[in-house]
Image (cartoon, rainbow, N blue to C red):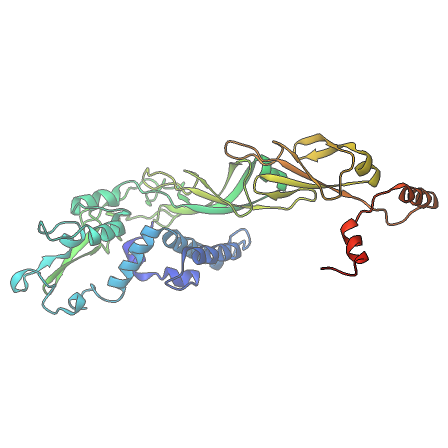
Length: 408
């Protein structure tokens, strides 16, 4: 999970190469393109690509979440511009402090504003408290130091992970179980996530006493900021784990088996709860999002939940009628073509299409009369005799126009 320091120091928009006012679609498009280019499977042994892949994934994890993006933008606006940094002066251009502040310029702790305290009736509806509570704890935290301490050492949800899967046409229609190989952050197997070398343990930070934040005075203000000693975690590792360098997290390759439901469409994003990166300190795992790509079919097309199929028939079959055996994705069915069927007529075979919620689509079979490119002498003679026997003009309206001297 990104820390307050990350929010202030890292430019996630630059990492994805998008503008600060980019919409969700533009952010997703940029992420997918970069993720495909930088994925470790396509760049084996390339540490630079792996580092960029992590940066891009972290940026998308924040900017794709509307609430976290708002928190990030607010933190960058207020802290990144120097508004609240020590030595930057009072925010908003008020040298003596905030309007309506303590009389006589008496110091007061901004933590009272950010943490949800303050005088009753001040009219604050949790705005900054919600924002900065989220920065320190991953969610709104109306409490003070104690709640921050609990959040710093408590469970943390794992990151969401996105991957892609390419399915054959029939697999997408009927559903399939596929193995997915992914690289994502996971709990370090050597230290089990605590960041300390095996045989040692982290201890409470002596600077912030486990709160994860420290306060210091600057002129008329008292500022709360992430503890520099423990980086906001509330604990210190004296002897870091050699595998994860004290972070408690390593990039891991894993293969999981995923059931893709029947009827998925090309480009569909499937959410699999709890299949993402493992949580920290006993927290729940994140979610896995699978973007499905569906290959085309040589025989079938798809319109919504209906399958389409074109079947050639001979002139004799169309004129005299016949019973055809047509393929389906899971077998075949018999289709009766009545005598006198015209080319291009579509027949509906109910229930043999794509499974959907509560119902299954249909199979739409369109028959087309196949005209032979070459005729044997015998076939030509037979067709000429047939033409002489056919009394009907196949184009009576056009014939009538031509006899009348043109169209009206």
